[in-house]
Length: 158
Image (tube, rainbow, N blue to C red; front, side, top):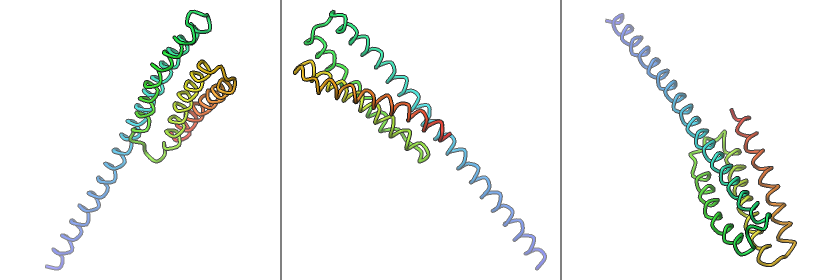
């Protein structure tokens, strides 16, 4: 009987060890899937931001070429601001694993800075205040820096 009990204990112990190992492997796989889902979402937002920026710059080039007057350009800026806000909201809503929090923060900051740059540019168009133009330029530089930092942070996180 003791021998049979030892055999059962060993069998149950083996089953428990296998179950723990399988559970651990499943949790690793779930984490990998979560990381991949985040990276896909992050990349999609980056692509959408780049597309929006290019579209906006196309509109701004029309203003620079005198095809748009200030009033038209103000309207264009106003049309683009909600689009930037939508991208900010999407970036903030990402299910972000801890290792990617820094890259998400930089991405959100980059989009916010670009949006704020456009707001200050609009203010410049309304007021002709050079400080608004300078602030717009500074925020655009910050946006580019944050964008590069987001890229570096996501690469560093793996």
